[in-house]
Length: 187
Image 1: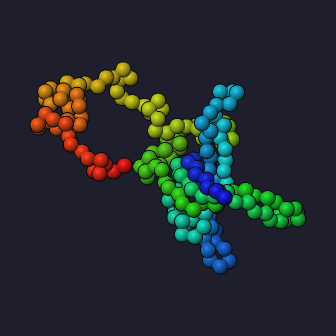
Image 2 (image 1 turned 180 degrees about the vertical axis):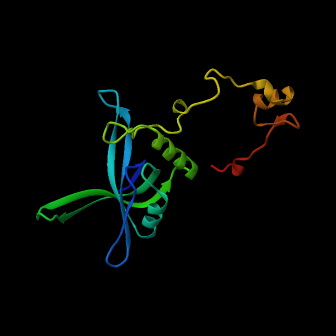
Image 3 (image 1 turned 60 degrees about the horizontal axis):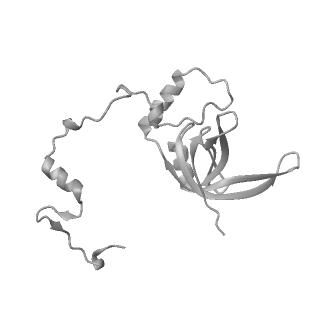
């Protein structure tokens, strides 16, 4: 059976690092993962996925990732149950993380934190978790939007570039096709 999960999202709060009685590190966190489609209202919904990670990776994640950090996780879905203080059985479904990746640089995270501190508080409960960071449409630019590529800025030898564009498999020195046997091909 296959049970693999790959998620990319932002941490909704700082990672909660704890230790078991035997001293094993365990961290829990929630990822906000935006959906790729819009709902009937024209906005994008966000799923909040509970995750758990164990041992040294748990400590590393807690040290380097903070609320709002963009991370990727790989793991499996697991279910468990426990009895709460009222004696009721509680069932939990979560992602047990095997690997994670920090998907933004420290400088980008610091800049995001500075920008978040300067913005007025958001009225909704979760803020805008569906921002598409790094997309060309969301980044302010000092260049005009109708800027074009200046082909004159790059000097080229017109004879060489015309020949190389005509047939990339032609031996430009001899003017003949390259001889490749089927045994030389990697596929």
